Length: 451
Image (cartoon, rainbow, N blue to C red; front, side, top):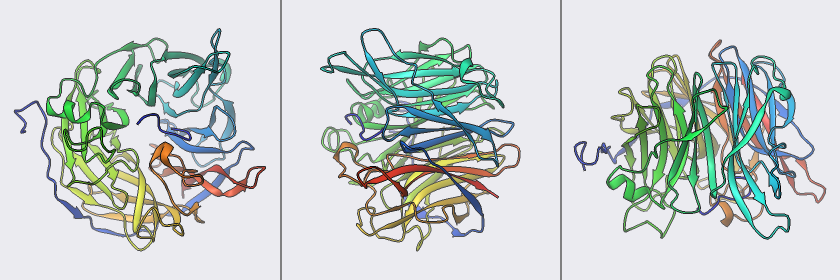
């Protein structure tokens, strides 16, 4: 979230599948992929960018305004310079309240030709003495390939102190997931059956999962919700802690779970992907999940603050392969902020990497890396994406506990694959390009497109 994160056994038992706690080093070698890097400079700055690519190669990109409270949107065909379309959550005003957008954002380029977006908003009373945090749903039909802001409708679908929402779609069926950060940190899911125009609550990926529910209640960090267009399942990934040991004491979440729904979000079954030895935090920051839309295979990744690990499932998330470490030294000796995309057997995993031994090194020099596998993780090739370092110094993953200047990159960046040519587009933050009026780094986002 922008400038802060709000508040943070066997198959037969409770339906939770146990996974190995052992982790091996993957067979990662140096790669040779090349990228063009294009700066999407804005006078207000942007950070925490996200990207989705439609079937025809149309890109949708969002970023969180740094000096304004709003979510910036760009669209355009893969291989081009995208067009800035304005602030997409500026119209979410309500009587008797001031609404500020751009707390978090996510974008989905639907197969129906609709651009779906969701942003985290803050609703403040006129005297600025009270506030609520809510989730928006923004629906822009006929946006692919030619976006028109006049076609968009915006609405607020929850105001109960929500946090970190994600959006995904499977045809006209659209899903938004988010944290109930004000009460239990359970994960709420809403579904639209009409391409994003109306919404209703469905099941919770955490509730009813036995021991997994106990480990995750008040005790998790949620990654993306992902809809599979092959099986029509829906998946949600999250990291959770240890009941009675880490719970309510630390945010060092040492489990990775993926919950699966086979009934459009009505009910869920959790599977344990990985369990680390304590005390290890697997939330640096979000665990990430992708489904290959050509075959339904699932791929998960996460960071322990030093290593990015990877696991895969070929049985709809019931069982998961032993985790392997992906990032390759010396360039990416330490790696954080993983994100993953998959298409037609190719899996692209990105992360911020540094030769330094720790993400807390004051002199760490960071770059963007992409590790690619075409054999379900048996081997990877790691290529550098950024043409110059995108950050120097500490990358803090502690939300509101971060010191000034250590969280300019906020909490994530993304990769997506163009279904037409199989090439990757990476959208990331660089805080070395511009400065604000006080001389402080002004984060900007950069689009890197595979050549």
